[in-house]
Length: 209
Image 1: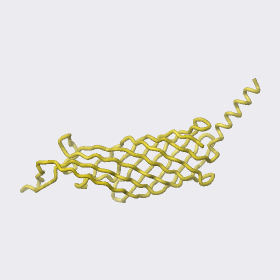
Image 2 (image 1 turned 120 degrees about the vertical axis):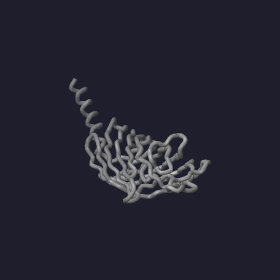
Image 3 (image 1 turned 180 degrees about the vertical axis):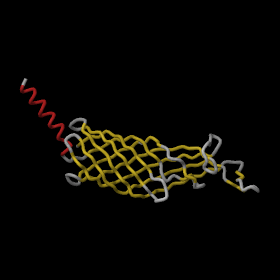
Image 4 (image 1 turned 90 degrees about the horizontal axis):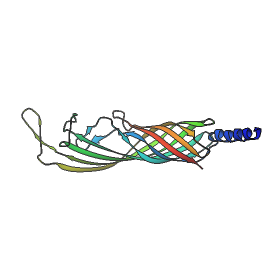
C-alpha cells in the first residue's frame, strides 16, 4: 500500500512539475474573432462589431526559461448585408459583402511558469490578409433633396489587401497530462488610432515535445 501511494505521488509530481520546464508546444486552435477595421468596399462604410468562429494553429517555442516565441495562424469569415448609408435593417435584397480573413501573428511573450499552468503576456506584429467580395447597387445620382439614386443593377467588386499592425497577446496554458496541454488566449490588433481593433479569443489543445 505504501509503495502504491509513493508511485502515485511521484507520478503526480511528474505531471505537476512539467509546466515549469520549457518545451516546444504545438496547438490546434478554435475560438472567436471580431473583425475590426472592416470597411465595406468601395463605400468605405464600417460594419458593427461581429464575433465569428475562427480556426487555426499555433506554436510556442522557448527562447529562454521564461521567454518564448508564440506564432499563430488563424482564419475566419464574415458575411453581412448593408444599406448604402450603413444603417441597420439591411436584408437579402440589399448590398452584400463576404470577407475571408487570414491572420499571422508572430510575437514574443514573457511566461510566468507554475507547476500546472503558465501565464503569458507579450506582443509582436500582426498581419491580416483580407479577401473581400461585394455585390452592391452603386449611387449614380442624387435627387433634389440630396437623397441617393441607386443603379438598377448590382455591381460586383473584389478586393485583396494585407494589413500590418502591432499585436498584444495574453493567456494561460494548463497541463492536462504529461504531454497534452490546453490554452486560453486573447489577441488584439490595432491598425489606426481612429479605427476599431480586431479581437481574437483562442481556445486550443496542444502537445508538448
